[in-house]
Length: 282
Image (cartoon, rainbow, N blue to C red; front, side, top):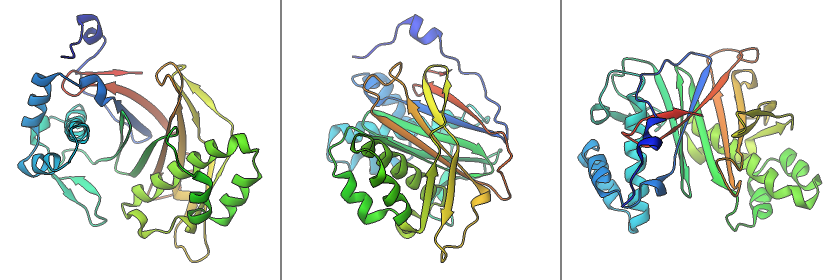
């Protein structure tokens, strides 16, 4: 059974959080840290609706059932740090873009979840559409063939112009950014990935020695795609070896606002949590 020492838990808090309009909160949790903690996992099950439990139980493999349970408890718990709503009392529905939304929330919270091998993330904003994606860059894929099939010609040219040793990393930059864009819309692959292009300036800054962040990222569209680049902002986040030993995860965020946001000073804040055991800002 997994147990947590008092010193581990003492660094966490359950205090309510404020969320400013120029902030994006990025939450992370690692499902493997909860393997074997049957009592806590049983408590998580009580937070879910009958529909959520039925969906979770339909997964064939135990690991997938475990991750699905953690994901649902994770989102319910973290949302409760923003509002006086108990984790089990949150209600969700699919919005007009088939994207999960909170029903009757006292705050205009928007969120998006993504998960990959042993990492679940959730990005939270006020009012504005947010999309996030996390990928494990160590998985065995023919990434260049995928790029040639799905990316824009502009991105393909930039990718193949790079030295071979850099191409795989750049592929995951583009892939996660594209996923975050379509997830912010909530339309999935109804938006062809070749209809929009990202241009990445590799200027970066460090966040507490835990994350490297790139935010000088431009978005453009094919002539037939109706969208406005000035209402979009995107970020790439690279967890450092301090929290991601193999440095094999890539995170991207895309934010869509109602008006020009190019001069807004957005702040990213990061939180590590275990559902119902509190969080730590990192």
